[in-house]
Image 1 (cartoon, one colour):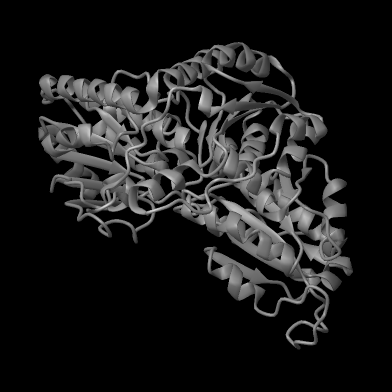
Image 2: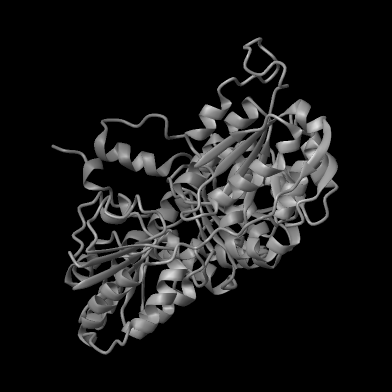
Length: 564
């Protein structure tokens, strides 16, 4: 169930519009409770103490104590992606808010509903540039660069209203992050505060005429192809997507963000292969493409060099993305779930060329063989072991690292919606806090595919995993530095620089944090170590020596290959 539906359930519970005597901190807690928030991620600070304290007294809300505001924002983002609920991060003003910017940026790039509540200095000093502690005169301007909407409160009486308004806004249409800043004196002050009614965001409905045009094209198509993006996941439209695909008998290809929109063991699912060369004939041969919830990003389209047929039906809740990268023959501005649900009854199917579907499946097999060559036998065995031992509802989190690029993002099957998480912006380092949020959002065992270089950027959040005894298996593929950049440098530079790092003993680091840890040397040691980790109630770090595995063959894009 998505955030929109969860807010719908709460509407009648929060519509009494009665004022109550509250502190500003209590007003924040009341507003978040009315929105159905269950988890708030953050760090306590002198500029958010009243909010933090009120949240700890609020039934139904758990405050997750993270170790860095960036990690808290990433964790809240992953919580939103895996649970379908609103993600919330609480920070201090100034340096705390600045620390969280990378997490807000990722949520914006990944279309995730993340609400940031941050402090601000006292109203009597705000805007005067006097050099007050944690003063951030242009904090609001900064926040607006990575959010759909950011607001500043000026009266305690008004605290609840902008929180609910911003949350509703960021859950409307394409999900996005938002922020509200609250001066510290207003957090302490007592006032009569009204928590306004929570009105569920409306799902944008498709124009009937546009649906009829789309249905006419699809019903006549012999080689229809469905392209499913992350908007299918955020709209909870997987069931509707399957109905449309089944009605047409059309294969479904997904972006990486769209993974799990159709189970990857489904006979019509081609997997996350939109950018793979082996799939270009499948896309090019299609006579109609139904694209749902996608922006056609650069890597998904090989920097927009991929040829997509002219008969493109594009469904997206954000009108700004339709036609931005590829022209749409039938543009449909609508929520994916609403549009697909209305489209399915209009489809009669029966015109699909069965040979097209067979050719598509053969292309998948050809791509799998190519992936197997790139991945090598040891890593191939590792991902098969992961899939066999993990339950289907287990989130699979990947940081930006070579194993994730080669097999975590494309080959390791995703079998349920909301179980695939990665930094959509391809940032390095968010893996650990993303796994924290994914484990709490799903309540299921979680695996993290992590590089050693990226791990150092969020190492402190291992302590958060330890504190909450989260069932996360952190698989650190350790090559002593930045493997991706190392290979790019080898391709385009005359020498290496900045990529070979002093790497700590992660087993000792984990042990020092109270986390079970094992060193894995060779593929034969992986399965028993991973099996123990999956069965363990708390977190585990597996430090995997990549030098003891058959090498990966990471193919560089053409623009990153050395020119003679």
